[in-house]
Amino acid sequence: MSRRRALLHCNAGAGYGMGHLMRTLALAAVARDRGWSVSLIGDIDEVGSAAAQRIDPDLAIETIRRPVLLHRLVAAAQDVHVLHLDTYEETPDVSSSGALVSSMQDGPYGVRVADLSIDANLGAEETFARPDLARHPLVGLDVAVVREQVLRQRVAPYRGAVPPRVLVVMGGSDPQGLTARVVRALDGVPEPLSVTVVDPRDRVEVREAAAASVHDVQVLGFIDDLPALARTHDLAVTAAGTSVWDFACMGVPMAVLCAVDNQSQGYTNVVRRGLAMGLGVPPHEDLDARVVALGARLRDGGALGTQSAALQEMVDGLGTWRIVTSWEQLVDAPPDGSRPSPPIRVRAATRDDAGALFDWRNDASTRAHSRSSEVLEWSSHVSWLDRTLADPDRRLLVVESEGQLVASTRWDRRSGTDWEASITMAPEQRGRGLAGAVLAASEQALTVEAPCRLLATVHTENKASTKLFQRAGYLPHLPADAVGFATFAKWRLSTDR
Image (tube, rainbow, N blue to C red; front, top):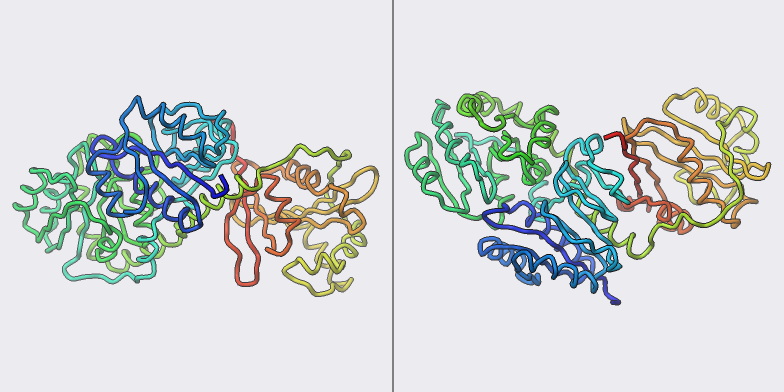
């Protein structure tokens, strides 16, 4: 298996919806662009298969019904590097196959034992289910799976239309018949609207509601490029499923509703953060009144523009890249924390350590791999150390081994959850294999409340540091910037749930 191979599994169609399929196709496209051989297997009906073929005609798709599907998954996993699962259904144990198991979960749904467990929902770092089953968790909007179609629309600025344009899209299944209810409720908005309804199932009740509407309503079937259509609208009315993050990445203002139970957590988080207007939860007794209230929002172009900018800031569009490059790292350079080392002791730095820290920082090799390569002056170094020791958002640690100073680690708070590491090894201690133990001990000494994310920014030419953080389980977070520094990340989640 010289070429990397990935088998992606999801189910799609009238009974499952299309969200899992759209996420899976986005991952397939990025993996293939990076040289992977990719195939898709699942219980996918005719509508889902046709959609997949239109979006990616070159993708190998095997449609197979349960329970035969489960046996096929076990057999197929023997021949791939990565088995990616995006389903709420029970899946077989493939741990003996040797494949890296990557799994999407949405709150409590789809949770399973996996090497890479991904929950891309807003606030997932606080609500991640069963972190004990996840060897490497990826959480939050940073790993929202966004398609290339969406990224192309991200650069288009928000422009208001007259009359306002409203997109109504509830996904492929819409089991509660909410599409027709929303179209009828929009009749309560007195100002003229231009409404586009996406209804892949071509339901009679939707067509009847559209025909009877006081507004200009157009009903469309399955749309191959929904992002391009959405970008032309002032507001999307949608269920709180996977498409929410597509709209957010593009900056399309939204009104969301909870259509089914597995959307409840995502709906609550989105509305609570003010990223969308909330249209309610089942049984939607007040849905009409909430929809009518959208009229006021549509008249406020400033509010829509503000929401558009806030949404784009929340979803940077790199989630798909983060997942696929994590596959690559975990396949090519799996973590290794088993190497023995001498006893390590970590303590908080003091002013008495100024001399050693000064010498280490001015070492030519240290400066060559730092963002600032200038030689430090003693007075400025001492002033920096005093400020650092007094800063509550900075933790400076000194690491000792066998009675000698061997390294320092600085942790800088970058956000409410993020702490970035910077390690400096004593020049005379390099090459002794201590770096892994230094990092592990420094992580333990960082006593901050979970959830927190540990970050490491490393120059691409610094191969030793890159391998150090990769072996410790830090996964790709940001590609290299203009001067060659890439960022890696590792989540520390609470196990008290």
